[in-house]
Every structure is written in structure tokens, then in C-alpha cells.
Image 1: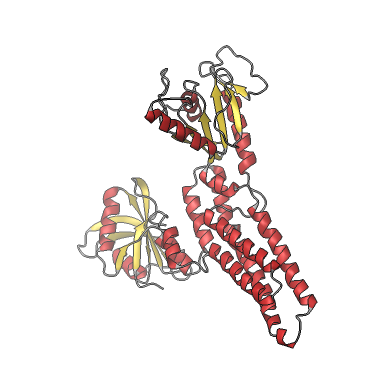
Image 2 (image 1 turned 90 degrees about the vertical axis):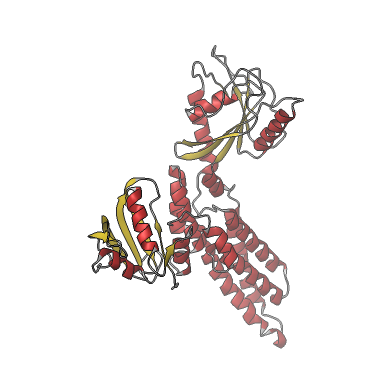
Length: 433
């Protein structure tokens, strides 16, 4: 248990019908009953008046809830006040709480951090919870929920347990080295177990980064020469005037990002400067940025009126789109679709193709998804250590590599990460979570 009792609005600060104020720590019960002026039965919603203990002013008529440790989100005593969501009500309750000795406002992610420290969540589950709060599409929500229940952290712990068993067997054989060679059958068992584990690690890593891309969004860059209709297409797909459209070449100088939800798949659509030779230093910088964004995209839509060749110089999937096809012109063999902002020709077909491409590239497999770079780095570190262990003839060196591998896997669930790593992770959470 921690000495401080913390509090924060857990439902956001915008005006609403109801706001939830969460309190966690050793004084949660005392301060709840102080404001409510009555005993609160745990796990039972109680309608009560809330008053400021210092002034006696009535703050609100609300619902109060109490969860006693360890059966709470944080594993501590937790109180919740479901108050009316006006700014004056919320501000009054927060000020009343802040005047109580031993209470302080929560830091970003502090409730989740306490849940992690008290064993209510592992680190990957806490991250999945943050992803669930940030989810903007159906597919992101589903991935986050899977991460909370059957995420990569639980799989990593299973692998870690198996590694510890193999490592224990390897270290036990060290005691027999002075008496003679390690029995061949023991080393065969060790290497067989490591071989199976190595295959599972490698298969999980060979996922095309689907989890990270679904979490961040499928990156689609609109590129092409000036006045090809790039900004017009962006606005059509976004269904709003996100970019300035002009007949003058070089209007777009910087990348313009729009987040789309295409049938549940998150798409980051980017309009870029027209690619051409230019003496204008500002336009040249915009062109350089356009080429850079295109080279790092998941997909490039190359727009042109005359079938101009793509000019991005990278191994990125490119769809050639003929624009301004107001007369309904057919595409040639190298073009995917013809579109027209005037008639709407090809727009629905293009959207359908984008949805199908996003589904193919982002659809989750059967196993837990890797959703963050730190998960991938840890798995890669574990795989490298297992590979080294399989190459060592000496059992002492093999055992040391297995220690490193188990340490890397433990980082995913947070069992071996230092304090500054936890600080970096939980500081990105929202206040109240």
C-alpha cells in the first residue's frame, strides 16, 4: 500500500450529465464518509448529499460507491463519486478533496500504475487498457480488448515459465560436470525445448507488424505531380474541407493528415506537395517531405491526369489513380481506377479497395498481437538470446543466455523493468486512469 491517497476526475473534464471522481488510497473510506456524512456499505450504490467538510456547503446530490482493498481496480481502497457533470460541481468537489490532509491530485496514469504495482494488472494489460481508451475504431477496440484478456503479456509469461524450467535443468547439469560429461539425453531435452520455443517466438514476430499498424493507423499517402487532384481526393475521402484546393500549382507545401474510419479500420490519409522540379526552396522542402512520407507509407496513391510514372524511389505498394476523369475515361492496364470529383466516378470503388487492403494488412491472426515497439524489442532480444544459447556447446554459457532471454520476456509484463521505464509508460496515460 502507498501512503498517499489520490483523486481525479475519471470521466473527462467536459461538461456532461454525470462525472465520476475516483479516490484511491488508505484514506479513501474516511474521506468518502466525511463528505457523505454517513457510513457507506462497500459495493453498494448509495444516494447521498455531499458537503464540504471545511465549510459545510452542500456540493451536490450524488451516487457514492466504495470498493475495499484488494477487490478494487487499484488493489487499494477505492471510492467513486458519481456527481452531476457541471464545471461548478466538479470544481467544488475537487477543491474539497484537495483541502483534506493526506490527499493530492493523481498524476497521469497513477491509478493504473497502482493497479500494476498491486498485481491487479501486468504492464501489457495496462497498456491495452490505455489503447482501449484511445481506440477510435471498432478494430482498434477489439484489439485492445483482446490485449486485456489474452494479450502478448500472458503469452510472454508462459514462454518465460518454460525458459525458467529449461534453465533450471541446464543449471542442474552444471553440478555433474566435475563428475563427467553431461548426459546426452539431458542436453537433447534442453535443445528440443529451446527449439520449440524459438519457433514460437519467431512465428509471433513474423506478423507484418499488424498490431502496431492497427493501433497507429494504416498509413496511406496521396502523391503525384502538382494539380493532379490530391487535395480534392483527400477532401472527398475525408468528407470535409481538410485541405485547400486551388488551380495554382504548389498550393500544398506541407503534409496534411486526416484520420479516417473505414468500416472499422483506422486509416491515416496524408495529402502531400506536388512532386516536380522546383527552384523555390520552400516548395523543394515540401517535395522532400512528400517523398519521405511516401517512402514510409503502407500504401501510396499516385495521382495523375496523364498516366505519369510514380517518382518516389522506394519499395512501397503504389496504386496508380487517374484523376479528373470527368468524361468517364477507362483506366489503362497500369492504372487501378479512374476518379472524378465532379461526377463521383470511382470514389466508392476506391474506398472499397482501401477497406479490402486495410483488412488484408491489418486483420489480426489467431494469436495475441504485438501492439507496441517495446514488446517487439523485448521479443527480439529473447529470440536472439535463445539463438545464442543453441549455438553454445558449454552448458554454463547456455544457462546464462537463458537468463537473458527470460529477463527480456519479463520486460513485457513489467516484472523486470526499472522504475524510469514505468515512469515513461504511465506518464502517457490520461489523468484519472
